[in-house]
Image (tube, rainbow, N blue to C red; front, side, top):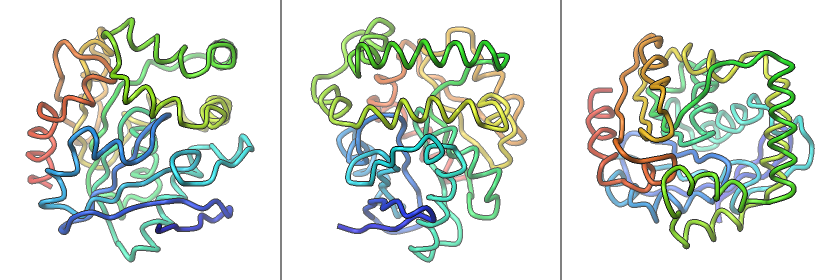
Length: 259
């Protein structure tokens, strides 16, 4: 089982499948990197790309550090740099879903020569004032501590209908503490998620489920990017849009083919 060690000593698991230009696949708050296979992405993408399936810190077979500072977005960017250095890869395409889209945007900003293009899958909200953000974060952490992953799963099912049982199992198998630490670490970011994504310098494909972005904020985000385009998946929310790989892959392949 292949691992790379991050600058802060965290061991990170990865797998490689396919040949071609590198494509780093980065998930969000739950599941392990095998989700990319289960959802139908790897079988197609590995025909033309070197797919790097990455268990980012707190996920899958990677280590689960227990300090807030370990989940600052800069640590995730350091992990990407360590992984690319370990593999001898000068630059890569990046496909990030959910929280992974924030990591991708941060990596593009801090490591511009190493990120060829970005596929950012999910949604971000408008910036909140510091006090409002802190209050919202504490509410979310309290709800997660009380309800666990089921609280988050139920929030998604209210939006878009039942999440498949096999994916619920993968989400519940993920360490919840890393999500709580990520939430607290976001309070220490020097930039808001909104500004981070809008300021993305790399060519970007913005993918979003229509139900998770009813105000079309991601349309505004893509328009504010230096080089961004948007593709919306109508009638789908956060999870079911990701699982609809048959609808997503044509957009992804066309975008990667142009970059």
